[in-house]
Length: 188
Image (cartoon, rainbow, N blue to C red; front, side, top):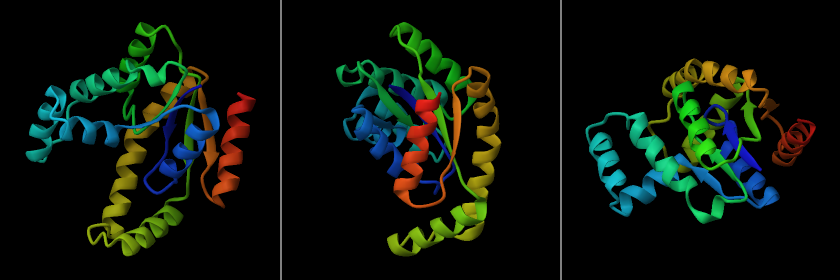
């Protein structure tokens, strides 16, 4: 199973990624984890990414794409993977298509976990309080949700155009959401 997982901040992607990876016996690959591994390992790509991050700039697609390509070349993804946080835009989705073509495999599904903005905002405010994230204020969270919606609309259209998109309501008990995702994937 080769899965792309999409969803706004606070929709439960991390929780569901871990559950789906376990269920399908595939590695969950988070771009955040890839970045941290490359930066802490002082790989050439990690050093390049660190330059941008230190300057407060976004890491350009070509560096992110190269890190993902490197990760998808590793042995543990031969029977599948779940990508969480990549692709983030249509250009990265096209790049992912090329990577998968080079590996002679295809993406099985793109799952978008949807969630009401007000509910997600409350969820993130609660998490910020528990985790002591003073920078996660309501205006900051709402801005992140706006950015996600703007960047993701063309991406969901991209996957929908390929017949790969399933959208699942991310609100409710964790087990309920997992079962909704599995049912939607299996129905595809």
